[in-house]
Image 1: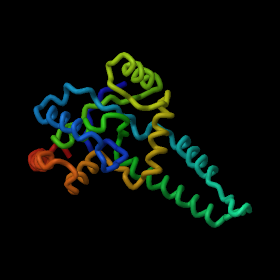
Image 2: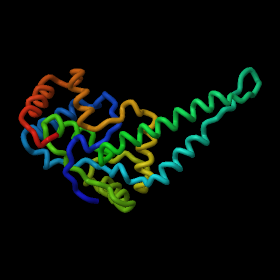
Image 3: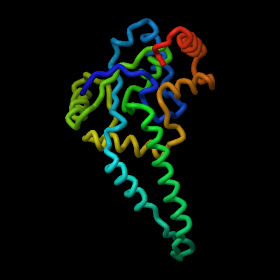
Image 4: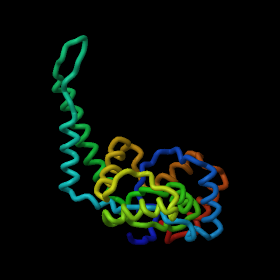
Length: 212
């Protein structure tokens, strides 16, 4: 594992607009706003280039193989090649689009959603632990078991499985795939955050040039 200090625009997330617990976000926001964000546990990330092009292509082919053209209706079975070809084209295009977005940032957010958002809202850099090998995944789970970390809700036991699981989820929610910075900007523009957080974020943007 390696400690990193990242800009919000360097971290990619599944950008659903629901932020979960407002109470937890408020707690972390106050801590960052008072200048104590570095005292919190770092978020957990993995590099977005962890998976080799060959492995990612193999995953694409696996998805294509699972696209079926066989259908059952009224007791009869038939094959719809046109529909299958259309679905394959959609999957291929999604992979190409995903790969383009992936290359725009260096890391995936695996754990620490509220901390990443709170750091961004208060115009701070994000403290992170970068997983670099399979042993790091084992160590993270050991830290959770010993109470050093509160949780890490992933079942995968290798870094490759972990990142492929993340990417698989993203491919099914591609319209919401964005950086932490983009996600916060959308939350702010839609006024889906408390007004005091919005004001703090916008004020900080006007004052902080190195943050972008």
